[in-house]
Amino acid sequence: MNIYVRVILNCVVLVIVTINLKCTVFPHYVYGRTVKQNQKEPVFLNKQKFLIMKAIELLQKMETEILVPLMVDAGFSNDGEIWWRSTKEFSLVLTLQKYWWSTDDKIDFRINLGLMIPPIQNSSRRRPEITEMAVCVSQDCYLPEDIQFHKFKNSIGYCIKNEDNANEFLGLIQRDFEDYIIPQLVRQETLEDCEEFYKDVPFWNQRLDRFIQEHRFKLMNNVAS
Image 1: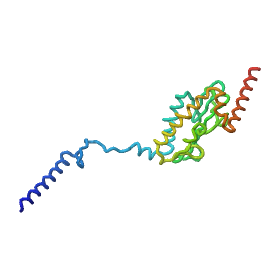
Image 2 (image 1 turned 90 degrees about the vertical axis):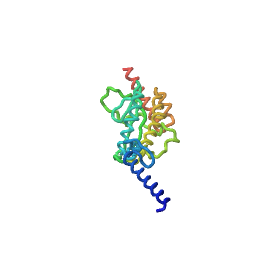
Image 3 (image 1 turned 180 degrees about the vertical axis):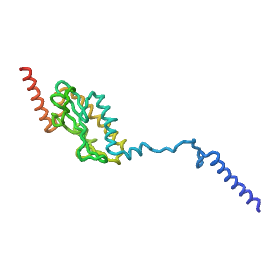
Image 4 (image 1 turned 135 degrees about the vertical axis):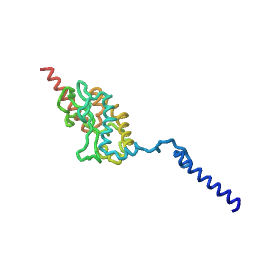
């Protein structure tokens, strides 16, 4: 056999032996790169989890991780899905309203905001009702128009589905609450502040004025008696 052919064959055999040795003795040497033993390839577990999260789980996550901490920090009390913060004359109110046709896989909901006159008393055992509110508007009344329309928007508020991106939705909700809803809500420290805030909101501005007048009239009668 030609000497040059023998040299080439020997080289091929040497390469094959070397590769087999690395795979046997150094099993962490793979495809020309070293990997620490027991090291797992990076997988986007969080992303996968979010993608398979049911809509009802996403809503619960929003409540426990965003709504509850922010409302508690702002000094609100709650009974179920109704939150309030009271002064001597009125209570600021926020409710999470999930619509009856919602399922675990697709949920339509909105945020109701407004106030009650007279104020809710923490010692009261009766749960306050939305229909008793002097003002009850949606989150859009508190949000700039240019951010009201997004992929989770529907005609009544928000819509979330099983396949929605949880991180994107939670980030949007946190922005709405932290940057717009709560700051504007807590700045309403007096009835005059409330009148100023709602003065350009049709129907509710007149309803608020009527509630204020009736409340003050009752207070005057109580003092007189």
